[in-house]
Amino acid sequence: MVRETHGNTAQVAPWGGRWMQLAIGIVCMSMIANLQYGWTLFVEPIDDKHGWGRTAIQVAFTIFIVTETWLVPVEGWFVDKFGPRIVVLVGGALCALSWALNAVADSLTLLYLAAVIGGIGAGGVYGTCVGNALKWFPDRRGLAAGLTAAGFGAGSALTVVPIATMIETSGFETTFMTFGLGQGLVILVLAWFMADPPKLGYGQARGATAPQRRHYTPQEMLRTPVFWIMYGMFTMVAAGGLMVTAQLGPIAADMGLIDAPVSILGLTLPALTFALSIDRVMNGITRPFFGWVSDHIGRENTMFIAFTIEAVGVMALSAYGADPVAFVILTGLVFFAWGEIFSLFPACCGDTFGSRFAATNAGMLYTAKGVAALLVPVGNLMVEATGSWQTVFYSVAIVNALAAFLALFVLKPLRARYVAAASGTAPRLTTRLAD
Image (cartoon, rainbow, N blue to C red):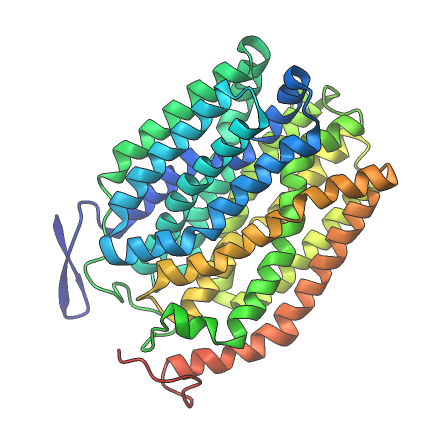
């Protein structure tokens, strides 16, 4: 333990201080990233062996996302009450068990059970790490949440090629078991070093994250219109991104691009492998980048820019994605303009509703991702009905354009009232909660 001084107040902090806590959270997030972003690599091999069909297999992905997100508020409550260590320890063990079960699953029932277990574990790790970042960095919520979320967005980038290679050489069963146990072990070790900040308000807030005097309880937050506006926007944007995330392998297969060679900057890889690698990197970079931008120009302004880019990128992918090089570049653009929701919305939630219940409140907002996951199979149904991915692309683009409009013209003025009320510069909007 070390003692750090902020203003006139000396505070005891864990070894390495808040930056070490942030680093631990980032690594833990990277260890659970493959449970979501590596899934698309396993869909075709699982179907080839068992013949269950893509739609049935993708139900496991939906179950994973639903359980990962909808239980985060409960896990956040445990974090707020008992601290982050125990939640991450249990989460890491469940993540390892999930992939071990995937390795031996001989029925859809067992595959779905593994998805439930993995979702609970990943949600515990994800919610804890993001909530901890919001608490440790009230002065840089956008950047801290972005860096933490980057671990999840880009954490699988370095393992895309090894996983794809191991599936090819050793089978998907061995790959599930090897990576599942390895990733879980790393989380179990790092969890012992996680800790709550010694005092809320650890950093000195500034700029877009003004000093927070009011801390909304989860019950109070749920009674505010601004929360539900954010929830609806989060659901809209997340649904499109999850469709692309889960279906990228099938999209490439239907376009005949899985093994098409692509050379960029002297590196040559199959189109799908290349796209997955670049997508993970871009999906990671975008989170701290747009988080940092939002700390300076505001959350809603940043949302408008990012969601507009996403709409344009998806339309371009629809028009030019059949070309292997364009497929790789444009999917990278789509992921760059999508992944920032996992830094912007938690930061926006912390700004609006305070730090004291940050893990629980951010967890409740994060359940929007679970709602969005229910829409992922709709993409398969659209393709089966129309015979192409064009309807899916158009729908995603329209939804992102609508979310961009809502960010600037609905959320921004509404949230300004609540931030003013929380800082004591405007009349209270709900019953006052003692600081």
